[in-house]
Image 1: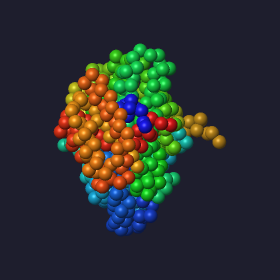
Image 2: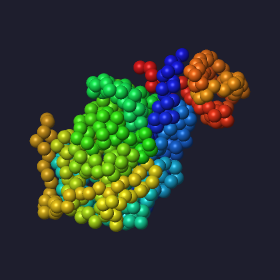
Image 3: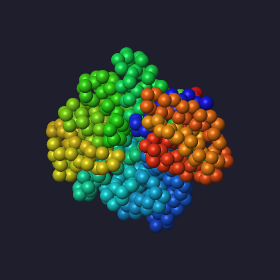
Image 4: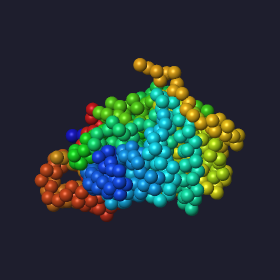
Length: 452
Length: 89
């Protein structure tokens, strides 16, 4: 029989340390929905999603019950809409977004991702039309998430696309000004975007993916944090080992859930995303892990080093626990979604520059950061360009999800509720990058992209 | 298929009898029981065979959770695989 201590340890992780599976995300290809008539395209999209994802939520709930582990989100990701929208007009793209919303409502999922475009080298007409209506599409839907890949290590950085995204973020903030500019929380700008990411708002079903696929995102900052707290004053080699062992256990549960979901739905398993995804709940914070490692506050000098070690140990532990690893895989540092990050920001310990440095060593980027509502488009573009450059130069994914909260100033905060949390408004540098951004064009791919 | 029932909390008179009764009613065959009491903290772990369960497993685990709630204990019934996955390579 199983060891009593092991069983009790698992129960403690679930009951007291917020261990959960963050998401089961069902990827669905929409290539076979293509039509030159937007009405027909929307009908096909609706039918395909509702038919394919019909059992996703009940099967997810069944697995939760069978294994006693919460599965927080059941989501769907679809082929980037710009690839299947083709000749649709801007209005047509809004219609597609509304169709995604209707389909999401019909199957009862938490989010649907894929109102997306890949424009790292340039824009097709379809991508341009889609990007032009992202603010409207997000303002007029609730569950639709949008992402745009503006750069890659292979292609360089499309600065024209970044300019468009700066404008889109500003307009999305304005259109949802009555709801704390929430549309911006559903919009991510990427470099080196992964095509099998199960996490929102950046999930979509990539071009090389099968017809349908199950991807699972694990979580567990609370479990890692408690393990570190219990370890006391051991040295960093021992701490790294401990994080690896904990990540292994967390990931094994993710693998079990993924295999079961795949078996019960009859849909192939894709990947496990090995991520430490925080929530605003007490005891579910990545910042608190860093603080338990020995920092007075997240944001102190030493934060980047601690995060780099954490991120590496999570991957080393997790990779052995899963057959296929992919997606973003690493620690997430979304400010509004992490109680410790919020506290660090409020006490003035965490600045956007420190966050930028942290993103060089962990999985994503400047995530869920609220900035003053009167921030100019050019400054937003400057923040995006800096962050995207880190991804391109380091051959890793980086992303930007900024909320220029309409009408809000330094000292205010915005409350999105639920998993999206609360964001104190963070200051940005006041100096203008307008002339640099205004040049447009493409920043060439770095020399180390030429590997062949 | 096997499930693990765990009962944790303050020691309560008759709790094993009540859990066993629920198992019998559901046709869950008890294979093994271990228990430990550390001061007043009680932990009982029961391995049951659920191949011939006469109700959906979710109803069975709900019934266990409800019994736990009524006795101020934490009672969970889950498939064995989650523990195996986490603790065995």
